[in-house]
Image (cartoon, rainbow, N blue to C red; front, side, top):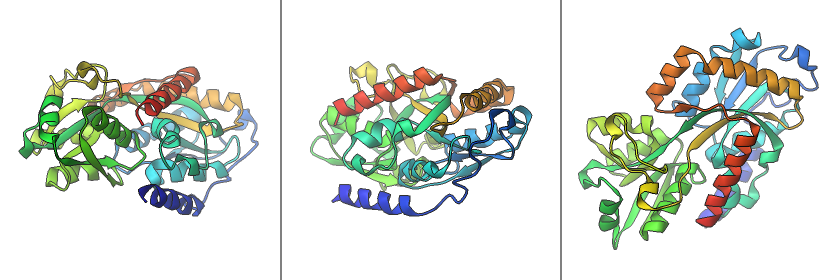
Length: 322
């Protein structure tokens, strides 16, 4: 039933023309691109890590592209609505979009993924902006501080985990972890990681999965406790110092979160190079380094081959843990 509801919702949402500027500028010669303001669409919630990064980097767009860069959001189905609507754009459009492994590695490989109206090949990934580690936190009243505590607590129970969308990276990581631990669970989807964290802090769910920075305030306030990081090894900085990675427990279902800046398939290579070079320069800004430090993410300007490999590798992890 959940599969059918999710599939129906995605089809209906994708049919709605949420983004009205779909056909903006096509077949423009590379030397004249951009001929007007550029829009970068973030398909995730306002106030999330990708949104904050997108808005900050856009402030430097005029300096390196010669035109203003506008940051906007289009929500729905964990990013899949925006990525579907983006296909209305023609090559060399002034509209760019963010995407990541949730849309291209998780969604196509989970039940319901057959209704997706896009594939990775419909876009050209130009540059990756950052690398981030997800963490799982829990209601502090439970006093669960590691996976050993979690496994002991979860025996004979069905645990609730708050995530950002049912087909997101966070949702898959939750599924894989609880499957490997042999614990029954229920995912509760929210339209944004901040809402998911609020649910765990209020006791609506017992656990939440998010980026480190999003959970920081709740961890510092003592309402949530960090349990595990979804990485090969543990964390060593600040409030997360000493939190083990799932790899430390001998588990294999983990990956880092990426945010690709992408254009429509068929876009001229010279336009792609112009965008990449501009964002490489923006990533060198001290203000960006400071922001990334605050958000607990790493500058990670992967090239096309590395982004392709990330999508492939995460797809294999997903398939192996269904």
